[in-house]
Length: 398
Image (cartoon, rainbow, N blue to C red; front, side):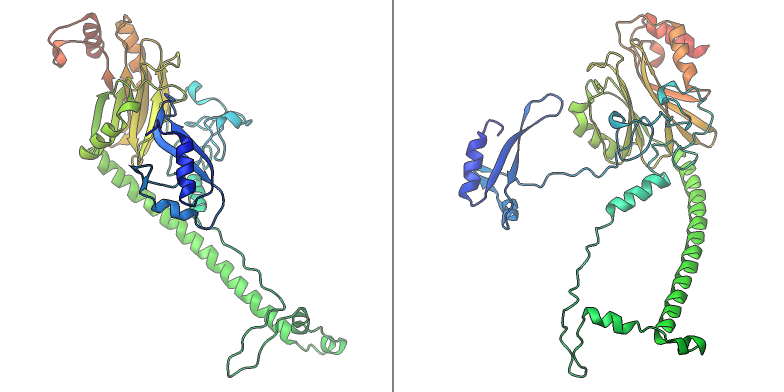
């Protein structure tokens, strides 16, 4: 329990034979409230791994786990490069959508224009997880580190019964590379060293040619896979499942959301009233999150869109005002680009038809905008009508 004194935990672990450097009570990152979790820092020792076998401590059942490591590659939202964040970025701004030298929020490119990646010049936004630059960095980060083994030049190996012992010494390399005499050069006599160098050169040439052939095959295979993925993507869009939810504080309902997405096989989730700020952190496995917080950056209002990573998409600029907060993405189907937007309109504002028209006009000719409009009308199942509902219905009919 979080009320347990850290000194008692430290003394109990030292009684078990562990040398404890520090014990710290962990807190929730947003509310700063204490959690029933403790971080234990041990002094280096050979038996430190035995702490994972502990099941009981201070008359309580416990679970000991190693710290969780983040596997995502950090990407700058200013210059779109990997390896740093916008807080430490000194490069000029580059748009995630069109790749030009301006901030993403000020991009005026129409939604019907295909995006361009500033990293690989592909037809996708720079934050697309299928980008070849991201995949190469991800593959390098997963490769194990090769350890070099130092060989003692004076080491003596144990000989087999049918051979004599071989002694490796610095003088061996000198004898292995004999120099050519003047008579050998003038008589075109080739030494054993020349033959060895010719063999090595032939092997290097072979591997260079083999590498070029494999690269050509890889490019052809990549083109074929892109073609196949395009058809699979189009077939998947035909059976797209979209969910709609007013979360009233998304961070407090993450487990409910995960269960709903899994049980109903949701592809895209439109969420209103996220209550996010710029310091909020929220992540769902296998989904990309796009959010639009309230303009005053306080924990109320806001909207968000969750999209499966397997769906090719890109984000468009948010529509962020006190009376409307909308977050939008664009996907491709058989009929072309389709904008999907999550919207929230607080009830205390008076919203006219012009307000609705200004918002809808930013989504392009084809769009689906779902959320909590706080607009009541009998056309969509309400028991009564309010001015918002009548204005929204009139805007749709026009």
